[in-house]
Image 1: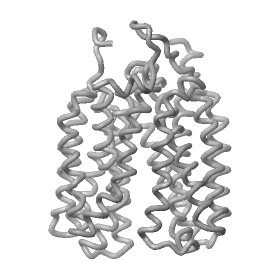
Image 2 (image 1 turned 120 degrees about the vertical axis):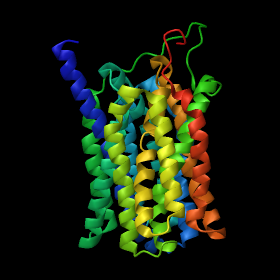
Image 3 (image 1 turned 90 degrees about the horizontal axis):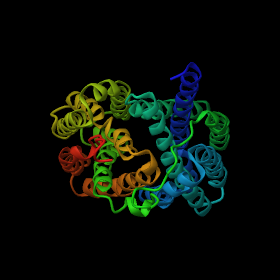
Length: 393
């Protein structure tokens, strides 16, 4: 690789980090102000949950289309365009929540749509950069997203403390996101062209839906997406309701989960390069399962904290490595990433109602055992993520 190519690839790597980080910033900036938006609209918890489902509905709608759009327009155009759409949608939420629920739901649907398309496009670009670098760094890009969520959440907490209005805070955050992401995508490397396959058939999302390996990877990602999402949504609630901790202590447990997941994503590439995907992911699935069981059945809050950290570490690599596996063959990457993301995002659509329902009938902690069952399934699915050999491609 020439010096010019090396410099260009470094710039591309940095630009991919920017897109992951600022998607996290955007999400957390909005999430930090949900309580104020809820209060202004006068929503009950169940009503708020239904309103927030608009985000998942938008994402599920866009994901089947995202592979085709990325193949046609390229990841550079898609990420830049979706950043503008996402910023406009969140700014719309920040303004329209003063006028009622309907405009908020519409804006959240657009936000979810743009998030799904942005997610697929940036993962396709990340996979291209990963291949050109010759190192397994996908999980570090996802660690960038985790860092972005922490930054956005801390900024949101500061805005609440200082009394900054929701509209001002979210609009400023959206402007910063667009200003950072749109210029950075010019450093994206060219996507590998989606040439025709040996059978003369052009890769498509519909074709990818009929591929057993792609579907198995999607189920694996679904299990880990639910594992990650359940921790984000329910750890603090379970600590407060089931272990009797203070609200601030419950938030600390959530922060430890997120920190452990970020550490796993940052240092995971070294393990992946040394041992390969299957042994590492199988080991992390077992660790996540153990941490979850410790959290659920622990005799005290300190033990539950330890379980939350092990749970976060175990959950760290499933989603990003699943995206890498879906993109193993460059020409088919957009379609396969879109399929895997579509299946994985179902966890965000169905996970909160499922665990909430179980929590109403048992406890939130016991409801989390549904996640444990999927982690057991993921252990059996890890061979599907093995890198394809030259003979199999």
